[in-house]
Amino acid sequence: MKIGVISADSTHESRVALTPDAVKKLRKLGFEVVVQSGAGLAAYYTDDSYQTAGADIASSSNEVIEQSQIITTISDLPAELTETLKPKQIVVGMLDPYRNTQLDTYAAKGATVFAMELLPRTLSRAQNMDVLSSQANLAGYKAVLLAANEYSRPFPMFMTSAGTVKPAKVVILGVGVAGLQAIATAKRLGAVVEASDLRPSAREQVESLGGKWLDVPMSEEEAQKAKATGGYAWTPSEQYIKDQAAVVDKALSGADIVITTAQIPGRQAPRLVHKTTLDKMKAGSVLIDMAAGTGGNVEGAVAEQTITTDNGVRIVGAANIPSMLAAQSSDLYANNLVNFITTLIAEEDEASDTANTNAAPNKLALHLDMEDEIQGALAVTHDGQVRLAKR
Image (cartoon, rainbow, N blue to C red):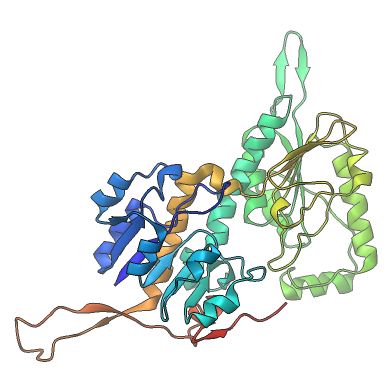
């Protein structure tokens, strides 16, 4: 069984779906691997390194698809490649399923498509396949470094003969994996950090990293609702939203750095910072909007652009930060894919006579099971049907 690696078809994408180390792991499992020539160069993985690991090199993406039963990718396949898919082929990647316009085409081609973003993150056996966490961890770290580069002052406090330099004040909005890593990184650089999240349960995590929790008054009824849902599914009242906006507005008015991380799968990113707040911020302050690619948490943010407001505030639309750490993010992503791919196979004994010492060894066989809690959750097309529930 052969696994193919397609080169990322994006100006802003440097990652590759499988690395040479991942190829070695797959080869040990019994897979063959074919890699599009140049697929790993932007992540510093040469064709020679793939060949040394045991992969074949194909001259084009069409050649990869022609040879492969399982096709791995970072993002969605280009439309011209989707049209070349054959029945029963499998596509695995971060496919932005709720915005993907090709699902009907995938289904019509008879392909089984797995969107890694849909992984049930509460399953313990799925944790080593969690691409969102592996990529967000690196993104939270890099976001702080981007902010430090844009900011015209240092992060830590300095005591000098010419005077004292105050530490930078950093505010993190959204305390998921990326937000927590951003807090830890900013603290290591010597900044004073405050953080806010819709989930009251995140307070303990923020404080354990040395950050200050931006507390929003909450009724007993809301507190119970948030606790019961883990904070992700509850709908806050209009009063809570108003109170939260006031707390955030006050914090941002005195902030030097703001990093926003809030995204909702299948929907536009929630607007957390409005122009009225931006107008109150200090000249030279920096906002890193990690959700710029899905509409932005910050009013005025533009993906892959840096905008400077009339009052001197810089808004960085950081739509794909993991790509800036392509070597490491590719390595983690590849490990996630390898762990998932192992759930798709079983060994098939071709030997007709088990007593025959010359019997053929076991070979890999696909074992697709839509009743499986992982495969079933990730499969967006299978058996000619689109399986993704609408939001």
